[in-house]
Image 1 (cartoon, rainbow, N blue to C red):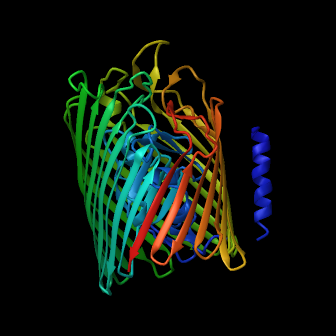
Image 2 (cartoon, helix red, strand yellow):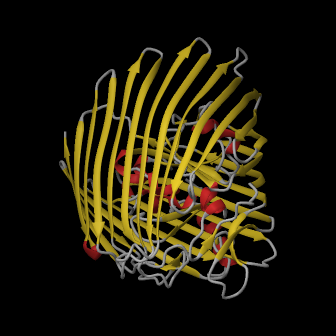
Image 3 (cartoon, rainbow, N blue to C red):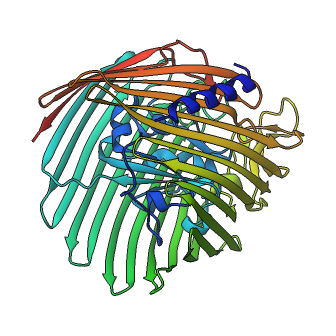
Length: 599
C-alpha cells in the first residue's frame, strides 16, 4: 500500500466514524506522581487501554497488547513476550519507562529487560500510555514516553481459573483471586505457560506470581505490591546474531513495594518504598555453558515522597523527591554501584479556557552527572469537548551498564559514552464524547548523543556502542474510537495511524535505533454478536524506514455461558512472512482457552 493511499484511507475512515464511542472516560483519574487529573482535563499526549479492550483484544500478554497502539512498536525475539523490545515514537528500547501503579520497574542492566516485569492481563484495570518527553514527571529513561500499568481494585469476592492449549504444544494455567470488604481489597494471581516453540530452539517456560493489597482508612490508604516473573527460553538468533542458533537465556524480575497516601487539609502526601531485582543468565551454546556464559544480578532499593497542594485559587502545586541505590554484580560487566536522586516541581495554573503546567526536574547520578530539565504543557479548551494541547520539554537518558561495559562475541560497550539528550515539541487536538473520540498529534524531537551499536567496518563481527550523529524525528499520530449499537449489542471500532521520519545522514550501519516504523496502521473491531458471543478482529499494517512492509490479521471469538468463558484466539491468520529484530515470526497459530469464575 502506497503511503499517500494509506493516509487518505485513514482520513476517509475517520470521516465516516466521526458522524457518530468509547465508553465515557470522563470520570477516570489519570495517574500521576503529583498532579492527578481526570481524563477529560488531561493536556498530555495520553492513550488509555481500558479493561474492556484488554478483555476483548486477541492477545494473551502485555507485549502483544501494546503493539496494537499508535506510536508503539514492539520488536519481538520470540512469542508470548519471552523477549521483546518496546519503542515509542521511533526511540529505542532504553528510552521507555514502565511503571506498575506508579512504581518504576526499569532495569539498569539493559532496556532489553524493560518488559520483563510485565504482569498478567487478568490483574490489569487499565494502561496509561504517556507519549513525548516525560522525564521531568517520571525521572530518567522516560525520554520518548512512559507506560503506567494500573492494577485492578475489586469490590467483590471472586476467583477465576483459566486453562489454555494451543499451537506448538502451548499450555497455559492461570489462577486469580479477588477479595474485598469495606476496608480491604486484595488481588492475587499465579500463572504459568510453556511451549515447544515454533522453530528450532524457540521453546519457553514462564512463571508468574502477583499480589496487590489495599487497606483503606479515613483520609488515605496503605498498599502492598509484590511481583515475580521468571522466563526460560531458547534464544535462536536473538540480539541481531542470526547465525547463533543455540543461545539460551533465563531472566527473573522481582518487585516489592509499599505505598501510603493520606490527605491533610489542602495537602496530599504519597510515600513509596520499593525494591526491584533483576537477574539475567545468558548462555551462548545451550548445551555447553562452558563456551560462553554471562550472569548479571542487579538490585534497586529506594523511596520517594510526592506532595500536592491545592491553592485557594484552584491552582495546584506538586513537589517530589526520589532517592535510590542501584547495584549490579556481573561476571561480564563487573560490579558497580550508583546513587540516584531526583527532585521534581510542577504547577498547574488555570485561567479561563487555558491550562498551564510548567515543571522542572533535577537529577543527580553519583557516577555520571547531574541534569536540569524544564518543560511545559499548555491546554486550551476550544469547546466543551474539544481541546488543543501543546507540550514542550527537555529529557535525557543515562547509558545502561550494558552500553558502558559489555564485552561479548558480537557486541562491545564503551565506558566513554555520553548521556542521550533530547528536546521535544508537540501540538495536538482532541475531541471526545460518549459515542466518539478523535485525537491527532504532530511532534518533533531533536536527539543528541543517541546511543546505538554500530558496525564500524563491513564484515566486522562485533558491534560497538557509540554516540551516533544527532537525529531529528518528526511524526504524526491519529487515533479514533467509535462506539455504536446494533440492536441492544454494544460494539466498538478503533482506528489508529502513525507516521515517523528520522532525519539523519546514514554513515554507519545501525543495529537498533534507525529502522523505525515509518507507517503503522491498526484497525480493531470489537463486536457483540449475541448475549453470549463476542468477536474481535485486529488488522495491522507496518512499513519500516528501510522499506520492508507487512500485513498481520488476528482474531478472537468468545462464548460466555453462566460461569464459563470459552474463547479461540488466532494470530497471523494471513500467514504473513515477516521479521522482527531479524527474527522470523510464526505463521498462523491458535490458542484455545477455558475460564471458570467462582463467585
